[in-house]
Amino acid sequence: EADIYQTPRYLVIGTGKKITLECSQTMGHDKMYWYQQDPGMELHLIHYSYGVNSTEKGDLSSESTVSRIRTEHFPLTLESARPSHTSQYLCASSGGAGAPRGSEAFFGQGTRLTVV
Amino acid sequence: AQTVTQSQPEMSVQEAETVTLSCTYDTSESDYYLFWYKQPPSRQMILVIRQEAYKQQNATENRFSVNFQKAAKSFSLKISDSQLGDAAMYFCAYGAGANSKLTFGKGITLSVRP
Image 1: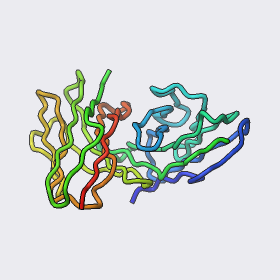
Image 2 (image 1 turned 180 degrees about the horizontal axis):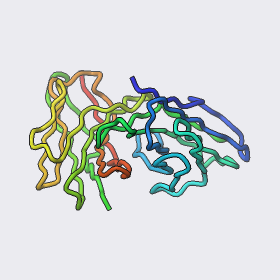
Image 3 (image 1 turned 90 degrees about the horizontal axis):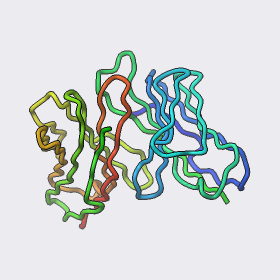
């Protein structure tokens, strides 16, 4: 069973509010990812990290920001939520000191965000 | 840049029958990895099967097997004896190198008819 956790699972929030989506993994993985996915649609990579203090923008432009101060923690922040941010956000992690090359990515259960 | 293409947005299969989901990719790397992920409705994404490019033998996991054609850059997933629980969205993914990120296809929605 994958040890990667996202909180909250569901969030309904008003426009203009600041929110932080939490993602933690206990597998010691170096790489972590944030994907945005509308229901039944493709995954869009919005942020990724190769390790502590390493973050990069993904393929889809996003107004969100991320930080990687600890290996196990990769939070995503929206300073001012808007209805266009309504979506599902998936966190994933892969790779580590003991992981074989080409090891799989493990996904969290996702956070379904609704901005009203 | 690497790309992964899943050209079929939806497929349907009769329970107990076999279905094949297609995936093609483009890369200039010689050593890489390919994955099929399953995302059931409102549930967590999980790995179905994994293939190393340097292995000629096609990967198999119970009812799931792949047809890996390296020269053609094709990586299809075959599901045998389809079950109702196989209904989900399936994503093909590519990864290479120590610091590469996974590249996903657009996914295909598979429905299973009872």
